[in-house]
Image: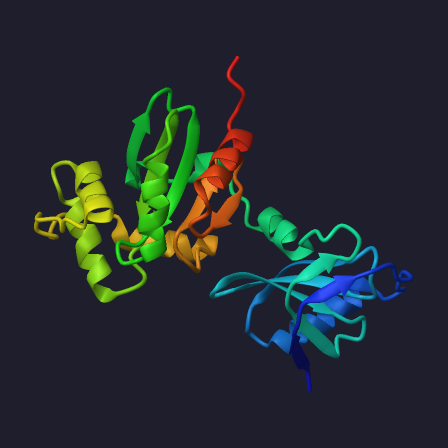
Length: 241
């Protein structure tokens, strides 16, 4: 029987295993038994472990597995020398998207200043961290903010987001709701992309709110501090020539 261990790992130098990757893949897929599909599998260069990325209903999950596929470890992996979060770095690669693939026609878009720096946020009106995050975004200049309505926390979130979409000024209705706690008044009875946006968020692995993307395709989660967001935006935005 397969054993799953939840743990944080510190990887130091280790000898290279001679395990066969194809054999490990077959063993892992057999043990998953419909619980997900292998997105990628690779031997870690400095440890006797394989990294297995599995696409599940909750998005991409990363596990570490021994060459015999007898133990699966669910947890963070860190580089022992540098302290780098190897799991987080790998997750950013696996969850990256093509910025142009996002359906911006379904977004609530606002721009300030030059609008050069761009961010797309999957947000729920009943998510307190979303409100904190968007209040911070409102302090930034030279930014274009695309909000994708993502009502996944409470049933009333669906009604609220549909009412926002049906408002004459959608951006104002959303900002009033998130920044001033003013409920939208429009009847939630027009055609909306809300269900499609929820499906899209699930497919992208947006399993928490806020989940946000930058122009370089990188995915981030949570209400980071404003200085951190500013630095990430600057790094992800094309240099103005």
